[in-house]
Amino acid sequence: MRKFFFLAALCCAMMANAAQFDGLKTITSGGVERQYYLYVPNTLKANSPMLISCHGPNQDYLYQKEQTRWPSVADTAQFVVVYPVGTAVTVWGSSFASGWNISDMTDVNFMLDIVREVHADYAIDTTRVYMSGFSEGATFVYYVARKAADKFAAFAPVSGYDLMDNTTTTSRPVPIIHIHGKNDNVMNYSGVKSYVNKWALAQGCLPTPIETTEDNCEVTRYTGGRCAVDVVLYSVNGRGHVPDDNNCPTQMLIWLFCKEFSTGCGRLDPEGIDNVDSGKSKVDSRKKIENGVLLIERGGKTYNAQGAEVR
Figure 1 (cartoon, rainbow, N blue to C red):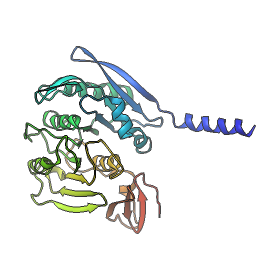
Figure 2 (tube, helix red, strand yellow):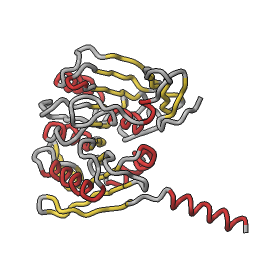
Figure 3 (tube, rainbow, N blue to C red):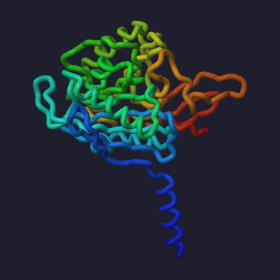
Figure 4 (spheres, rainbow, N blue to C red):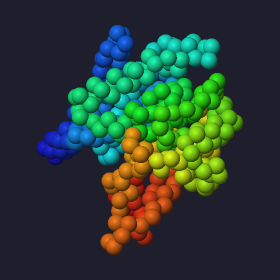
């Protein structure tokens, strides 16, 4: 009997956390049937944000989903997650079974078609759609920033940049958080700092970055950009060419950065931990990584990335 009640309680808990939608969708883009994986939290409200996460070359949405675990973040932070499915492409003279086109608008339009469909179905806030991706998927993120900056609020490339093109022209200033392993020998780390620097200067950021260390991450932060834009590089010690590992809480860093921006000029006033009030006036917060966990110190207290007080 006790086992029955335990299983019943477990089922109720699972039902309470069930998603509104959790699976593959098919969409026609450019006259071709394409697919994307959609995750919509059960308690999602209208005008919530959305994050798109693109897989690497010769990979698929399942690998990206398993590695990034965005749905678990989305359940707490309340946003929609999309993992698009790439197609066969030729990039940098090499052919890949799956990847992203960075020579024309085919895949950029695919992203825009996804945004329109999800907005129609779930009333997402189209001014708060964020682009992330791994490896060649990160290269594609930079490409989208150049081609459709007015449609995406912030960009979060991971372990990837354009090996052949240093173009940084965008239709508006774009916030960027770039995360890269220092031991990456596929999308070599040696070119990352100069590449991010060019993007930071193109957004009008101050030429001298603020450099700090957060456990296993060396942080290079360019501030003072137009429309209050920042460009930030997290260089992860000990990380190779992977979407995530235990050396740096990639998803939390990306979300805490991205949620401060929309496609408008200036920063948002994010809900949750970034709005913790001391009782008289808002006070500055300090983010740090402790034992691989992202923590925020504010007003003499410490919170986790979901906004819960931990000490």
